[in-house]
Image (cartoon, rainbow, N blue to C red; front, top):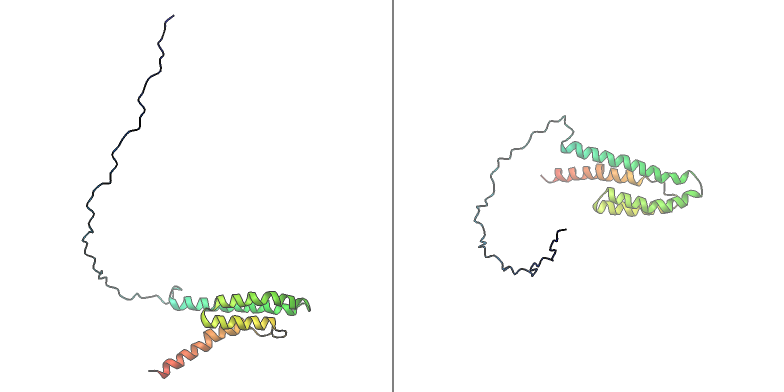
Length: 155
């Protein structure tokens, strides 16, 4: 039989000592000429048949609010269907309607409408007032007329 000399190898396993110093790169700000671009911006012509123009977008949002307002007013009338049960529904619906109307109409109009809606739903007998629909008319019909009158008076 042959004899093999199996001795463990001796490897020097000491940590390496690498010199890790920060590099010294000269980082100066670039001198790029940053002048505003001169792009010829001409008004675009919008095809009146395309539904993408601003007026139709506003009108679609306007009528969408009207439909939601009619729906929410109808939900407010549900309390009249079942006597006795309706007052409990009004207590739940009042804060929900105030929150919804404040989200539909931003600013001072939404805040005032939310308070009116809350009081109208909580007070007995006032459920017949269509708060959402009246707010829509105030914002999109009466306010619009007032703005036109002011513009006509101030040439």
